[in-house]
Image (tube, rainbow, N blue to C red; front, side, top):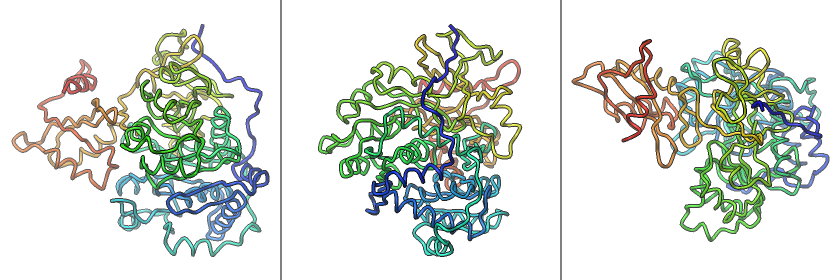
Length: 529
């Protein structure tokens, strides 16, 4: 039997835009809660949420933002983030998600590559001074004409320009692009996966369907909104079912997450495995009342069996679901079902979603493999991105002529259609659920005055899964860079999770006969240490 399967479904795909879908929810459940921000205590019913989305949408139109314009958002989780998500979709503007961990080097690239004209941003969070970083790069961003900060007079000033629901919204198609999400690039800079209403609304809807969401559900979302996990599997899965989104904190905090579940009687909780581990390891874990939980989603990396057992037993999440996907596929392609046994939830990434096709192919020939053998996982259907923003060549490398998205992941399809992800074709590092592409860090480190050559690989780490090791050939062997030199060079210019935590000084790299660096050998050599 071939490693091909598709999600047969009697539930039709949604043909509406995000704005139309929200209108349906507002009409059906006006008095139910749509959004709760635990840190500030603010609450929105669907009626209030819909009205504030319209207020912001008309303010954007009054500010000169039109259909197809790119609006950036560089912020931690907050209610304003969610309002911007739905208001930009309402007018057909393209919201560009910017990772809050990005620094000047990365944010300047994104502002220019996407041609962002208006940027929403947090003022600051922990050690990040977003305003100072924007001030530093603003003069070099040709399209950027306005910056609005959350929790600052500029937000109120923008809202004051709008005329409410009476604004004349542009005509939209569900296939219009409304979102760009940057994924780390293998060739230096990240690529902007461009997604439509149809892509993300349907993916959020079907992920929610598979865990049986209804207007009774309250979804705790400690994962970042800038990522599909938060804004699609969280926000869109909730609003397409009349459920409520609960924001526990601006960024992940295990105690704040469990407090929010207890206080708001959440029925669903999201996280990558390291988040669940951090929650379970809290000294006072047993004191939280988590009895309201029934389900949730774990994604980002494989879940250890013992962790899954504790999540089901001690967190009351009997129906917890594992999801696998990538930004380019809106994101989810595979998901475990509510009644799957422990082995399927920990040994596989689930089976195909409704209306999606997946196959496992020989990476060299593209021929579909028999079930049980390893190959590259490919996926096709409504969820595949429109393309990488303004990069047709890169798009053609990822999406073939048959519209199959090549994931770059090695997988095995079992006889029952469940899929195991067994490795990565390229050398991606996954640190605590964040995908890191060594090439981007290498390109950056080449700028260091003491470095002649550098190779970056992932090596095992007990807590994060993998950590970043930089193997460096110094310009002057008598005066090599130290780890402190390297980290100081990266600080403030690369996201913290990309900064190397280990350094090896070498005379030469192991090479193949054809002159390529043997990264696999570097990994294996230093994994032992």
